[in-house]
Amino acid sequence: MKLPAIAPDRLPALLAAMPKAELHMHIEGSLEPEMIFALAERNGVALPYASIEELRHAYAFTDLQSFLDIYYAGASVLLKEEDFYDLAQAYLARAATENVVHAEIFFDPQTHTARGVGVDTVIRGLSRACADARAQGTSAELILCFLRHLSEREAFETLEAALPFRDHFIGVGLDSSEVGHPPDKFARVFARCRELGFHIVAHAGEEGPPAYIWQALDVLKAERIDHGVQAVHDAALMQRLAAERVPLTVCPLSNQKLRVFPDLAQHNLKRLLDAGLCATVNSDDPAYFGGHINANFQQVFAATGMTAEQAWQLAANSFEASFAPAADQARWLARLQTTFERFAAPAEI
Image 1: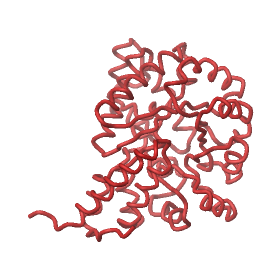
Image 2 (image 1 turned 120 degrees about the horizontal axis):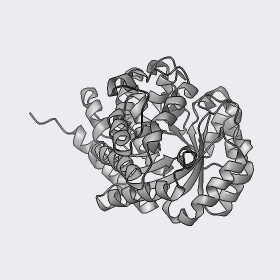
Image 3 (image 1 turned 180 degrees about the vertical axis):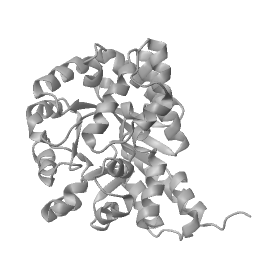
């Protein structure tokens, strides 16, 4: 498809305005400090931070684990169905302003059941927010994730507890501490999830080696790889990902914040696109990593010098990589074309 020419100075605004799908966003990671303090007060939860500013100052991570430690502490304020509704509603309202037309949202039941919060409480609250977002024009679905630092037995228990609510989530994923917890640790529970008809995704190749991506594909049968940036160290893997159009849900600001790359200028997103991979841009944990999806687009484009052509490809990839119906994907792609044509026209004076 021939793309209209876009003036370079219009690129930042185009990145914000173009329709896009977000496929890698942990709802617990959208919990802003202001909401943490508001929910703590509402639920009578004592926090180890004296102020919002002190909490924000603690967001100085050195690696994935140092982030997860504070991430789980923040989630401690989520106790009631209304808390989960408010959390998801806030994210979806923000996503709509950033022209996210479709969101597939990760949630971690084990983060909450470990604190005595029922799976039903979590799912009902999140699902209600998704339904309200759909009524307002934003497509939204849920993907249940297992915490990989816990056992496969606990993952099975979580799955069984969630099955009465299976109509409220479309897929199953794998997240949390990657190093030392290879995907094949969860081979049996993901086999069960496939039998049940769920879509399968998995975090692999963020801090872990390319071998973890192979395992996610061959053992878990993942349809999408979350992160996947370490694939560049394995030529055969890169060829396979390109040939099979296996999507990668890349999170630039997360990668920078957790020091996967020293800075965004060294990020390999452009290299992944140039190799023909179905890479996408996402925010991961926007409250902790410094930006929602538009900030991820704008900052990685500014740092790497990517162009409007790559912007188109990333947005189109996000629709292709989603689990949305083909008719919806086609509608969003047409809207993308219209947006590019609008930005190709001379700016109004």
